Length: 350
Ligand SMILES: *Cc1c(COP(=O)(O)O)cnc(C)c1O
Image (spheres, rainbow, N blue to C red):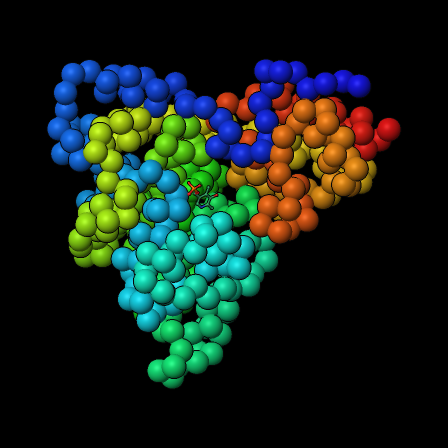
């Protein structure tokens, strides 16, 4: 039996990958001498200003350790405890954060919306808002959108505009879980502002980890009023890094010459290559449009087991769904993809 080469990359998650060279170079550069702590340092200032120029607006920026805290703290800042947050039924906020949004928002209820391909059906917002308007029901206050979605699809600008219009109509604030925002930007070929504040996003959780940072996400408030006292929320939530420069400096390397876009473009291209290689295979069925860096596919259980035996790591039943999830990252090579696809072909044909 052919075994997966030891130095191939896996397809389990984009967070299996290491630190990209640009982020690492900035991290090393920041490791000189003493710097002011808790975010009052020159690296944090520089990274925040770079984010302002990337988004072409004077936004408020906070660096936190991970996506769960970025989502839950930002959502908490949009809601009171008697409010509710609307999100897709497959959302990370609902199923992969151990109740952190409800916890940090002091009991705000998360209400689930349906929709094909991991995207919220705009009509379901109205249904959820109008389901009950009495005082006994948690009042919908925020809409959480995941871009790219949990299943590797990407909302188009028109889809986002429609959702944001409905949200505005019902006075819902809009939060975007952008753990893979970079993949969405390059997938659509739009500017970061077109995909965020121009369509009505109030706060974006801009993912860094899955695109090549060691650790860290940026919480970007376009609606600056909503950022009031967010620094206290971060501190209370254990998200204020004392040596903040090591969270923020890698963002400088990532943003200053567009590495964040290059890496996302590459991981998306690897997913397309993987899709093209496995789509024609018998007994394999690609489940969703491949817009970003993920390929979801139905692969027969025994074949999944044999692929795992050959040393390939990837998840099945992510979030309880039946698909295998194949994630590409900034460092996935064409050879990794081809070698994975060759093994899969051998097993499904043979
Ligand atoms: C990975 C991911 C996050 C962040 O997860 P953490 O493990 O808390 O960093 C948030 N949203 C989505 C859609 C993700 O895929």
